[in-house]
Image (tube, rainbow over all chains, first blue to last red):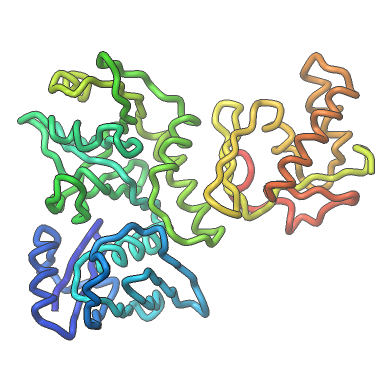
Length: 265
Length: 109
């Protein structure tokens, strides 16, 4: 049995193969909780035999998320899962690769925390001076580049997926174990959100404040959300809109060298 | 059907937020966003299901902007048709019931 807490939402995981739990334990090492209290979800992993011709990791393009009679059915080509929010139980049938579980956890978190102002974002995250800074952009905009230039007085937490959650009147950024090019699990800590930067390459470093309308449109494009239920979509939409009102958002045009960090504080 | 007996109502499944006169609307039918300019945002906000398009244009557009009634009505009708095609606005030749006209989170914030 393993308890993994991402964004302050503990999930107890069991599997019919102890070796798989060991794999998950290592993968989510920074997020393993030794406090079994207040577990939000008991997740059982049933492992099926792997078909070697299929890749382990794959995009979420073909994921299907549907709620029927109070239970969520979550399917991708490599897994099938059912989540009963009322009973706080879920099961997933998958092969022994960690990416299927990664995907299910991402989806479940987006659904479960949507009502609390929580959103998962495609964004790199850095903590500096006890503030979290998010760097978002389309593929190739420079998330991994700027993450790789992180100075000594800042800590890179993830270059891929960040979790932002409302805490009373502010927004807090949490680490996630979901990896990108840096390919290392993020740190399990949190900090108040200091600013959001939308990246673009340029010939000089320029910082421009984005108005809230533009910022919300931009940020919505970087939200990971898989359900189509109007109420949940509206909650996520409102969270993003609230977040950009409460958080400074900038366009950051940059050349790929460390001087760009002089603008980030 | 004329503007005098055309009624508009926001689709209550839509998520929308007003930022400095500009309304951002998220379609209920997929990850499509719409940005309404100032005038379109005014019409959107006034689309309560019970006020005719004609009355909206007279009270909210012609009273505030330097435009003739005919021009404003033509533009508003075109806008309404376009938003209706995308499913974010309901258009009817009779008043639209409140249940379908106004829901939490679909108006100005």
